[in-house]
Amino acid sequence: MKKRENKSPWQNMPLRIAVSGKKAGVLLPAVTSVLIGVFAAIAIPAVMGEDFAARESAKLYAPLDAWLYDEGSRKYISTVVIDDNSLIQADQTWPPTYSFYARLLRGISYYHPKAIFLDVILTSERNDPSIQRLVDTICKVGAAGARVYLAASRTPTGSLTLRPELQKVSGHCFTSVSVNYQPDEVDHLTWTYELASSTHGTVARSAALAIYDDVSGKSLITPTVPMAISWGFKPSGHGLRWVSSMSAPPGAQPDVDASAYCRSPHGALEMLPPGLQRLFHRDAQKPLCVFHDTVYAYDLANATPDDDRQISASLRDRIVMIGTSRTYTNDFVTSPLHDRIPGVYLHAMALDNLLTYGSNYKRAPGLTPTVDVDHYKLLGLGLVSLICVIAFRYIRKSIDAWLIEKIAPPSPPHAPPSKIYLVDTGLFVTSELHQEIQRDLRIKALPASKQTTSRRRHVTLRALAAFSLKAFFSVIAVAGLLLIGEHMLNIGYFSVISVATFSLAAEWFEWNEKLITWLYPEHGNSTHAHN
Image (cartoon, rainbow, N blue to C red; front, side, top):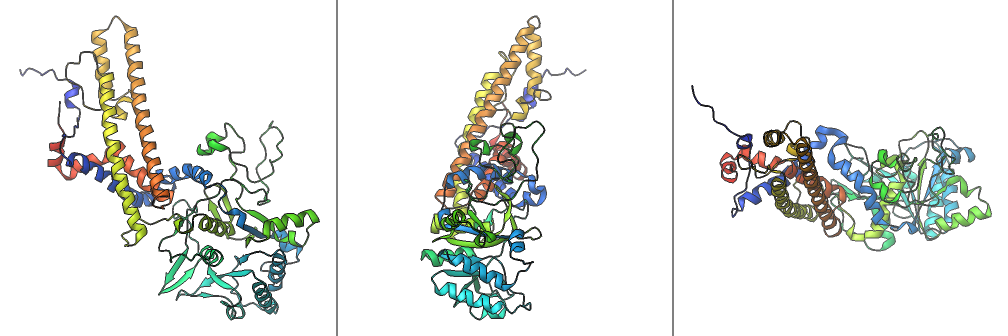
């Protein structure tokens, strides 16, 4: 009968130690982490839907980005909203007559705005003789000094078009602009804004870009990638007047803002998910109120002297953007902070970003092999990610070594592993490491049951400490990438988080080492050893 060898489970555990002095042992896993991060940022959205990590991380970071944005340039921009009440008071239905738009433009021009943008596409050739009245009003407003911009639809050739009476004076009395909008394909939130689009060599400027070029006098080079939107954080004192359909819970104290659909920010608590925010504020389920001043169309015809002063403060010398907020319309966008709001606020926020950042506005380059300066910057971000992953790798290995030293049994029968994983120490139910420690303790200290409890507590605390340290340095790495990506490379935080999240995840869960071992067994054998 063959004698059974007395082997410890330590010997069967997959121990991995990078051979010092070999650059491949450091660079190859780090490069693989970044490549896995880029691949995951492309592939995972199509597989996992809206609940994958990068977008959830971006949602958590959005309030901080908005808080850093501060006031932006909102003192130069206001919105005018056409809602159902405005149509009813003007004895109109949808679509209203062209004379309604003429009266609205004339009423706004009374306050001497710097520019007026109408975010309603007027292409339908319906039988309305008041179209000429609208054309004449637009030309008069433009001649009086206010630049006028009209939303237009795009033809298959890429040009912008309106109904013939307006098209005749386009470029003379007003400027036609593109209002194309594409929400995120996965979570349907508005992360980006298309500044310009080119079809068959014809470039169509967006409303925000056209107004910025003309009003600021600083024309931007035709953008090749969308803008990454930074949404505003501090609500306007005169925003949307929507009423919340949510009633207060039974026994709740009266709240003067209970009827409002939105709320003010909760400070640092905005970084928490809404479920946790509700522990401190019962209105946490509501979105933030809009960022820009809002005047309703019916205010212009029903203003008291006090209202008139407020309207004048909101419209005079400002860029006024007119949009709709009707019950039955699809002209809405979904902001990560403000939820579902009229589409005109997207144009206002995009223009606000341009006026604030100028040519340093945040870009949203796609993970595609395109040769332009913005994609070169994204490549630079990838190199910075590589450095961060290498640094994190060294830190992680140091923490693993410290943890092994602290939790190893006093006199292990064999040498302990060079490192362990979170799953080995976090749950303490199925891991071989925990079972080995418990067996050693039962053998060496059977009479002292309290020592077993103390030892278990000791191991748990050290494991939690190691996990906390790794999490802390992960946050530091992501913060560093955000700082470099946003403020030095002008890349939007969503693109930065997409790469950073998955690159660090590849290092955390060692997808990189597993992939290298599978693809290059000889490299795995040369860089891993048993104690």
